[in-house]
Image 1 (cartoon, helix red, strand yellow):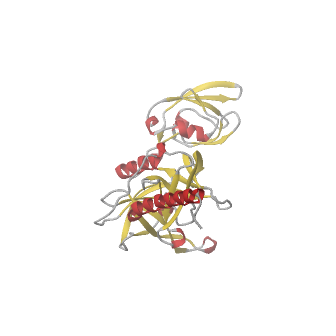
Image 2 (image 1 turned 90 degrees about the vertical axis):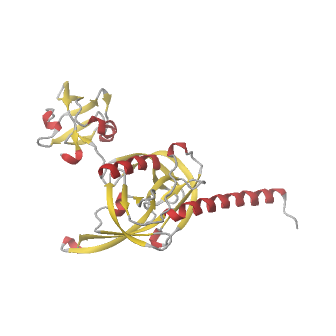
Image 3 (image 1 turned 90 degrees about the horizontal axis):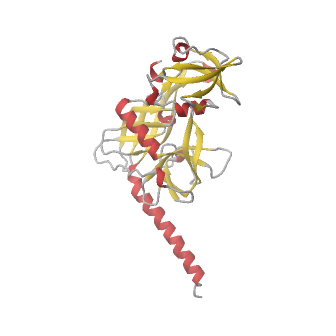
Length: 313
């Protein structure tokens, strides 16, 4: 029995899909690594110390051994071992680790490396084919495929800071995929796989590669990301940020902020939450005076503040 025209067309579409996934996988696979870590953690009940093991994924992005992964994969690791796709294993060192964006860079010293081609996350669209590759539950070089489900999501990092413009995908991810690449049909990395919602199916998240490239560059140059800070504890309210406490010798104290103040604007722009303030407070603000508009009691007033550097409080 001869196939119908519809069956022939369906077969051609499936062949094209398979061809795209296979081609993308073959292109990225030599760059993907398996990461095994050891770290010292508190013992049962908080007593004593013990060594724990964990792992994740990553990908080589330079010929001289820089590997990108998630911060939560390597944070506080006492030892990091990296296994390449060709079977070679190397001990790695942490170059930089940024929990606020969940991006880290580690490095191995090896020859004959195959760096991944980094794409442009601004060019992707919902519905676009994507392929994820990593090491879920230790099953190395596991490939899953799906689509970009949505763009512009926000995700809370383990540090508590909000990560903006996160990519949502239905390419299946599991523990161990963290830090691995999400690639387009050309095998270009468009995001770094980072999180899943455990109670859901097909809802996974990845950090856009444009964000990851910026963070990785700063980590390689400086070992950290410079961020501005004020030095106060706050709580979101409907009207602004309520100041709950002020650190001693902080920019907030020098600006005259007091417990009970309500911050409503910074640099002339409204702030309704701590996340809003984080978005406005950039590296460029370090050491530069800005204006805070606050409400104290029934009085609206302005305070001049000079943000400090978060890592040097």
